[in-house]
Length: 362
Image (tube, rainbow, N blue to C red; front, top):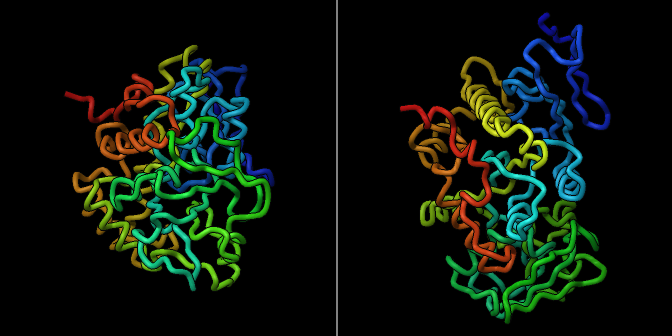
């Protein structure tokens, strides 16, 4: 018999489970049961609620903060489908023993020129001033800092060897796992045992800080810390115009044993992410009601679509529409020692799901 949806329960631990009634443990179609760890994105939410369902798959979604998701999946693959750091996943793949494969779904994309912080009374006023300076970052293999270093080397023109790098948490001593791979020869990277980079920036021990997580001192009102670019939107738009890079922060991984048992899940899960994302875009463009709490969001969406996605596929998944960004990032990773070898997009993504299905039709 057909399953009937009873309820979607939001739990304090941010686990979303869909409860169904069925005569058997499996329905007549023989759906397999998979689990997924993911942040709470509007463009994924229809999968959480089962408004969108991957064909042949019964999905239990665990919604949690990204740091916990990354750490638990990288360590023990506690679920079958997971949001994952782009840099850390590429690093694992480059070692040749990654317990997962990737599909080119990109839930989080953010420009990171907004993540360069300086002292308000310091000597740094432009990116060229970072040459010869002491710069802190939370983790060499963090995706955000990998993109920022790529910008410094390829766009600003400062070699990695001309900055003294310091690794420590921006607000406390620790972040994620220590970087396994080392920066290239000649690059100075010092691991610091305690303290925080924000405090070191204020007291003058370092000259700048690059981090995805804004310094809490600044957020709490400490005016001693400021952004290198206070009006960063225009700078980041110009960076995209010059390079075609729209940074991908996170992608989606499938546990290798789950994928190898049923390779078809890569395509079906990709299709579900694509459908959920397209539904989210329709909500953002809705002029009848304010489904997203931001005035004039429709005009902003259309401006962004024209500038970033002129062919009409808003926030595209797949390799070809994102090849410029993916190949630039893989180049940054290899040049900076984040990965041991220079990967290609075909090295990291499952062959069954390289593009949205509509692009495969003839």
